[in-house]
Length: 281
Ligand SMILES: [Zn+2]
Ligand SMILES: [Zn+2]
Image (cartoon, rainbow, N blue to C red; front, side, top):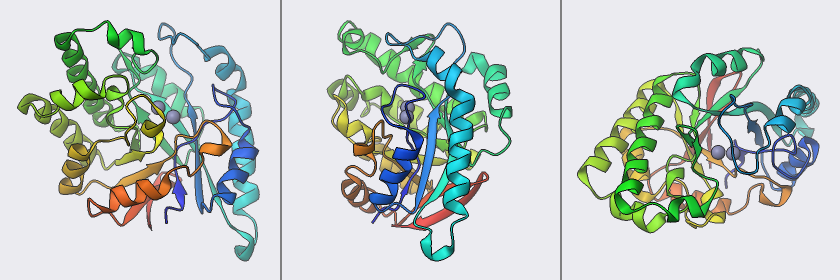
């Protein structure tokens, strides 16, 4: 059974529930370790259609203090009454041109347990926002986006700023069929292999996420080809619900466990004070 969930959001960004309610839901779902990984405040010029930048910026200090309070409350409980270890994390938007902004933001908080690195933007385009954007692309343009995504994922790992590589094939979100045709090409496999090598060399874990099951692609992130390559390289994995409400905490984790196990995985990684620990599942 999976008892570690390293990816969750709160009402400080675009999610629905409070930090306290999310932690309580994690305890109810049988988690022993629960990571808060709210979105990072994002540099100007990178906008989603439904932008939550201002809300996040205004609430960010409160996010930090609420999660730290929960962390202390849960972690200081007596051992026999300690069902949950709460971790303070952040889902950092990786934009190769914004490294100084990103470094500054990370430096604001000295007690991160871990940082997740995510590619949600190619240039200033938030590609995981709208189906219509993808429907407007012909196959060549679509493949160029896949290429750019995996090159950007590689630079994220090469930055060595983060601990976990999020939803490694998020780029398939609105075009799964075309993605699966593309990924069989030798040049696609080379790009993916380069990104995974960078993840391996940086000592990061790779996320295995149930979020894709709730999206139009209707698949776990990442797909079997990437799972197999990661397993062959010995890259550790980290489990994620990417929950945006209490109902999603631990959702489909049985499916996630069976999937990871089918590639030979038997433990998942979490971080405390940015030091790695492995938990069997
Ligand atoms: Zn994400
Ligand atoms: Zn997320």
